[in-house]
Image (cartoon, rainbow, N blue to C red; front, side):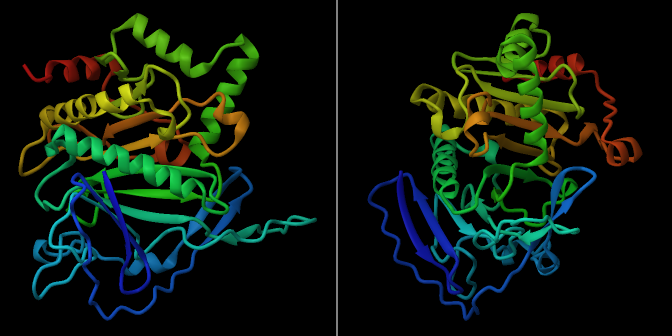
Length: 364
């Protein structure tokens, strides 16, 4: 992997990741862009014990542009995009409309204010998986998918070192049904200035399990799922993928390395080498569930990594969660009153049935 760092016209960082070492990146962004001026803040919710990001400038972000005006495609004569190059393998740049931006805000000293508010410090990046506008992650070759994994690892390493960053989240949203506003195959990375609510719940559960049993919660869950086998979708040498016993979504798969590690940086070469084959297999199974070329399966895929908190890192297990909001052909799972109002999910598809269906659609 060759890494080349440059700057866009407004000062944002752009990083090319190339499969070939002989690629030279000298393109300059010719657009007359002014320096980006964004501001966000995070507000503390007393009742939920969590932070909420307020980012009003995102109302102006690009929304479903025509394919020939895609800002993530390579630039060409007469039309300049966020990527000045005429082609690329993987490109990463700072989001022009970030939810989080800037350095850390001042910590509260002494008395906590009635309405705790801090600057929305952090960083949001866009990861363009390929220059091919009409492709998807599932269309990548194993070599290219491995490059994306190496990019996630590299970005996690860099963003974790930024002042004030506490957790890094690499994820992909695919499909208009999910809310995606750019059709080009891409993902995002958020570097949060706090530990996310989802991670807080998992780590609290892990701590309680350790106190109760003396064992690691994630290790026990993997052992139980492997022994039961009824919800296992893929059981490879270094990875295991299963539909969780209490899946929230109609088709939801959790992918774990069999050797517990806290984050992407701790994966060994054997796990990294096998990941593209396992992950591409899972994505293609999702597409074969009820997707078509004209209407591919919408999904969210995200890496759950340990925050930069020593005690948590010792207990946390890196894993990827992949799920679709489609519950059957032509029907979506909407978050209605129980889910949105009370966080009590009601799943229309039994996890065992979902796992069986995902096994059925494996490549012959």
